[in-house]
Amino acid sequence: MRLAAWLLFLGHFASLSFWEVSAVIVESENYDVKELEFGETILTCKYRLEKEQDVRLEWKKVSPNGDVSFVFFNNALAVDLQKRAEMMGPSIRFRNLSRGDSGQYRCEVSAPQDKKNFQEIIINLAVLVAPSVPECDIPSSAMSGSAVELKCREKEGNPASEYKWYKNGLILELSVKAINATYKVDKTTGTLHFNTVTKEDSGEYYCEANNKIGKPQRCPAKKMQVDDLNLAGIISAVVIVCLVIVLCGCGICYAQRRGYFSGGKSKKEHNSASQAESDFKHTKSFVI
Image (cartoon, rainbow, N blue to C red; front, side):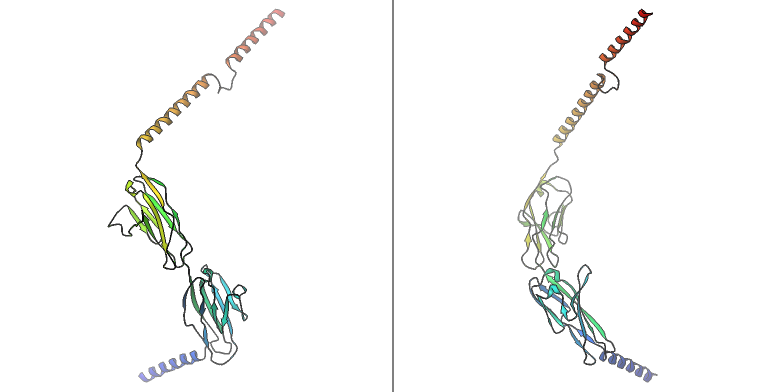
């Protein structure tokens, strides 16, 4: 029984080995390539065949949004790559990399005379880009006791940037327990959130973006002034509004009493009509 199992194992192993030997094998020296923008790199692709033969080699790119495009097809590079890329056997050398070159690249090899006649590998290319100057949304004023959110974002960096906030040139700690429980810094989204601002939160704020590629970038500093609620001003405004409403009401009543809003005739017109009717009756009596 043990001998049968052992022979079965050897047969299975031999069949796998034979299948591997009789198949086209595609490999790469680096499946995860990272290079700076404007630099150069090589996407390596190597293959082994069961027997010598002409193969069909194709490179395709899958962009981050899922679009698939040909990079190398019918023994020619894509037109937009011919001035800054070249084939090195089955491998591709890129020069002057741009952020648009990031994506997944598939090296596909077809060997029609091999038993397993097709194999592909996937190589990830990430073009590293320094952050741009972030855009910051900092309110110029806020009311004490209200919730306030400061926003910071930049869209160029790869990998994505992390963010730090500064007040009057001093960094706001990510851990708020040691300093102040009224705010929270989110280093991933770039938001600085105050649950309830106070006058002590007034100051100049700016944000810094950093992805460890190139120098960190910061937005211009902007002052945020936090003021207490002006109750006297609010009361004065309410009184003024009430006076305006009363005056408007009085004006409407006066106009209505004078007949400006009535659909009939004015008092003068009414008296003229009554006089005309009386003269007509008198004239009729005289004729009879």
